[in-house]
Image (cartoon, rainbow, N blue to C red; front, side, top):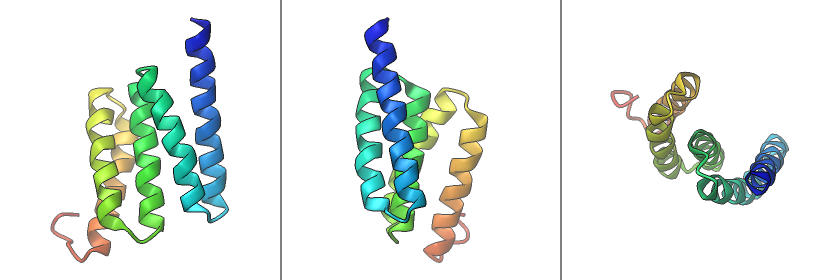
Length: 110
């Protein structure tokens, strides 16, 4: 429906703002945008978009030097990406998880 389409466009807009903020070295601002996108994606039941947004949030926390918090987001993302059979996203998130565990000095978990 039309409202759902507008909401999905809004979620994409917030995702784009998050990506730009992240690229500009502003992960905290990016988190704000991604959280807005995540809320809309949940509301519209966009599971794949939800999984991708959770991965983006994990990236921001990894950039902020908070690998444990990043792992929480990556694990949520991974569960959804598996559910939606997004193999590419799954691989990216597994790679991100591995990097976090390496940064924590836990290579066996990587």
